[in-house]
Length: 250
Image (cartoon, rainbow, N blue to C red; front, side, top):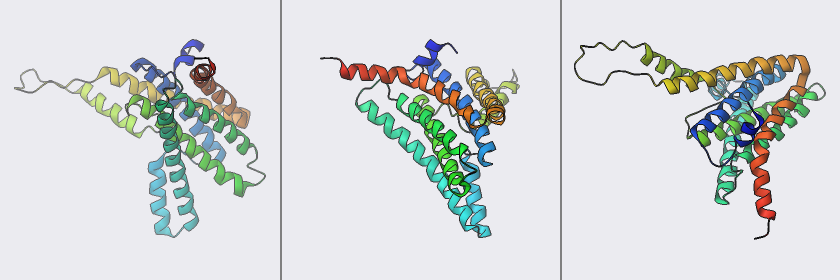
């Protein structure tokens, strides 16, 4: 993706194409973070369906500590989404160009913190392990809310269950045989545009997982540096514009 395009992805003025470009980029990021995070803490941190199910299982089995861990992960994800909503609405009230960029820059900073925590996992594992899990859940909630707000819930990036379900629905419509002599009713037609974007999101999430797992296995926690750098490149232009606007004389 060209640098100029990256720098325009978080601008306040939105188009459908720009939303999809940002959604694709963040799907790749989510796949990389999720896969790399699994290698770090042996659990996926974006799948709240599994977390809620685990809480129920652990309650029945009497695993109190695991219940608390699951509840903490769930609350961290919710807190991340809530922070995104607060930042976007705060910036929107002030008519800032960086209304979406604030959350992206925060995500970049938290990724660097994840790298720092991960590098110390072996020293105080009983402290850094749960902290790292909560941090990753917070990041996933933060990121998913960004694209949800931008695209009005059309695009999700951190979990693929809904994406794959919608993809299956559109494929079913595509393969449906409209009998020419059926009286009444509209013919079944697939939304090919939606089919393309769903396939793109799924493909980029998978590609991000491959890259993230390989980079983490090869480089270690330093693999978060390029991810954080890309997010910073996306977030900084509109935020710098806001700074210049505030500093310029009226």
